[in-house]
Image 1 (cartoon, rainbow, N blue to C red):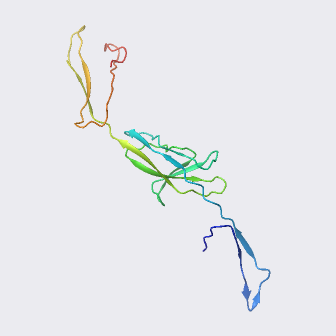
Image 2: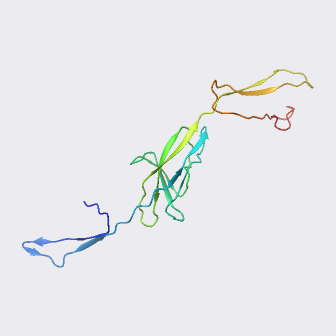
Image 3: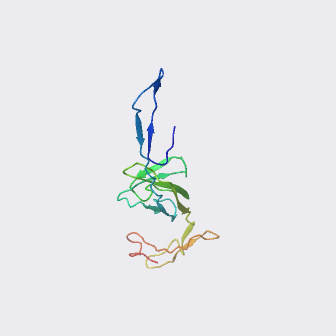
Length: 171
C-alpha cells in the first residue's frame, strides 16, 4: 500500500526463473488536491426547528455537494446534498462537521465545524382579570414570563374567535 502526495508512475520489475520480463509494465496514479474546507455560519434558535446555520463554498464550484457529519473525523454521514443548510429539525445544541466534495475528482475537503445553538423557550403564563363577565363588560388579559431568571424578552398579542370581542390582535 502506498500513499502518494503527487502524481506518480510506478514500474513493476518482473523476474521468473532468472528471466526479466521486458519491457517493464507501468501504472500511473494521478493525485488530485483536496478542495478547501467550506466556511461556517453558525446560528442560534429557540426550540426545535430547521436551523439557519449554513456553509459557504470556498472552491468556486457552481453547485458543490456538502456532506454533513456528526463528528470531526469518521462519524455518521447525516446529509449529502447541494443544500448549504442542514435540512432536518434539531432540538438541542448541535455541532455538525461539514465537508465539500469536488464534483469532478470526487475528492472531499477537510471538515468545518458548524454549530447550531438551541435555547429553550421560557415558560409563559396567561391570565385574565376576571374569568366570568357579563355582556358589555371588559377584562384585562396579561401574559408574563415566569422564569425566575428570564432568557427571553417576549412581546405578545391576543386574538380570539368570533364573539370574543378581539376582532384584531390586541397587544
